[in-house]
Image (cartoon, rainbow, N blue to C red; front, side, top):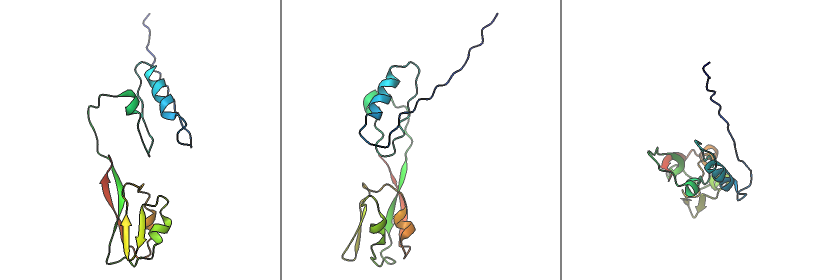
Length: 127
């Protein structure tokens, strides 16, 4: 009698709302203890499981994040963009808007709430 192989897939997720709790440490060590495993690091802020498992990366796909670009002709320096930015990625000083791309999370609040529609989002390749 032939035996039929069963394909069983088990998905284990490690999650927490707080940073620094050891999610990546637990997940990577667990993954390393199981044969034939696939690990996905879905941390949107700082995916760094690769630091623990040191994979051989065969190909890379570029990922982009939308970053605000200010239209100086339309902007009246009202400061609404800076007011709604939860990450302090935009500052308005002396009729100048400063954008800090490294702080921007690409949420789009600045462009959405700009009363002058002076902000468009441009793609910046994530590292």
